[in-house]
Length: 196
Image 1 (cartoon, rainbow, N blue to C red):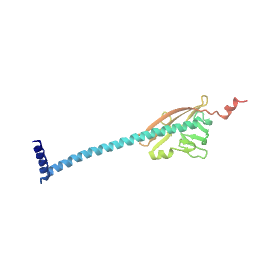
Image 2: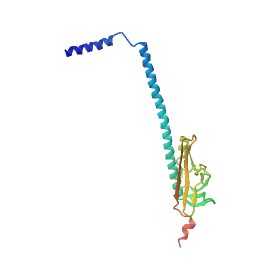
Image 3: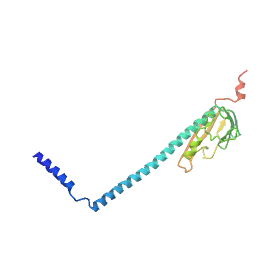
Image 4: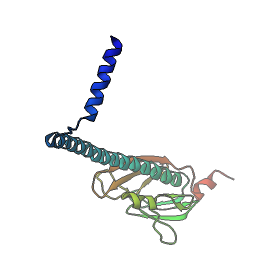
């Protein structure tokens, strides 16, 4: 009995496959319409995901650039000597062991040759400037009000204070970090006072 049922099912499938009848035009159009709707949903979701990914990636790159910039400037300020400030405590020049004399004006660092350092020099090499151009990000010194600013130096406590800002032209990215660094190197006049 079981064998007969199996044979009947096999014949039914075989008959169905061999029948001349195909899909109707309405069935084909309905299938195409359903496939188009599904593809539209998938394509719309994929483009949204790509947009979100790019936004997250740009923010991550900005945070990496910010931390790299803060580290580079902190290292230079940490070992700075012969620090000159104006009457408001803003740093105008200092001497770096890696770069030499550095002049600061309105948040822009320049070396003795007058070349802008983009405030991201590590061991005399501009490690981030080319990346900022590719990513479309800007690295700047800014004050609390968002204006371009210059690092300040308190001669009594020997502490540099500066804020580094990373932003893009669209205003989507605006990351700022304020740092206080204690300079370890005394000026030559101060270092000779205690030695006799």
